[in-house]
Length: 355
Image (tube, rainbow, N blue to C red; front, side):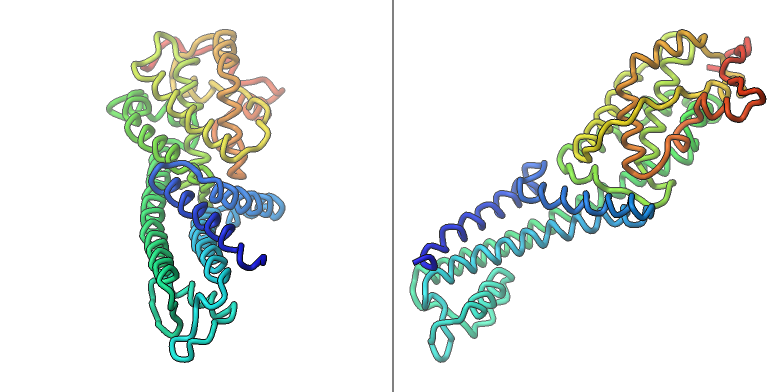
């Protein structure tokens, strides 16, 4: 009796897999099934990376998530159709003997059907089961086709993440260096950090909104890690807004909005408690480069208005197992390196601004 009802959970499972597959590859976002698998796999790898202190483990999140998604869809279809065909004794028989197939023979039959191999040593003899065999083969073909459409954009998006990270890290190893480099070494000045990155940031945000699992990708090398480069850019934009005198440059608000959207999406899909607000960035490197800044009180007040944004920046850094000192030189770091513990950020700014 129970065996005759197995087609119900079987078809339900097939429906869930197909819906999940279409949701992820066509509509965008996470399906219920893939989201659960992605989260569990990522949590396991992240916990292992934290315990061992080995960032290589975390760098394997990308291929592991991709493979786990493909296996989940394939095994889900395989199990679902196996339950459907096994629910009716004699639905699958030997091609020569026509004796009813055993359970494992049904598993084998479904496997080569959804993989579209069509070996032919087992068969169905009743028309409804023949039709279901065709439907199963079609679902397997859809699975293989959409698996390709899943993998290729992921590889492209991962490459774009690395390209942006390399560009930013080579423009400056931290937030202060990004600002100084833009002002002194780039022909477009501050616009190279602002409107010059609008299209790249918008494209990256769109792809992360379409494929949430991209937020769980990490890289081993600091040069290629978006978990370092994007927070450094965010902190550099805050330095431009809060530390430099005069009105903010055109396009600054849009740049900060794009960065904020990316880091908040990262926090949403890599859920961890928000860390404390990072220490204020030191203005000493700007002063040393001859760049005039606002007074300390005005700078501190501006930073306070963006405290939550800076928490999200720090959360992205720590999720990648990096530390904030790799993002920006802080007042605390500068104070620790000065004699008597006096912060270099408190020194008066040079009179001649460089804009």
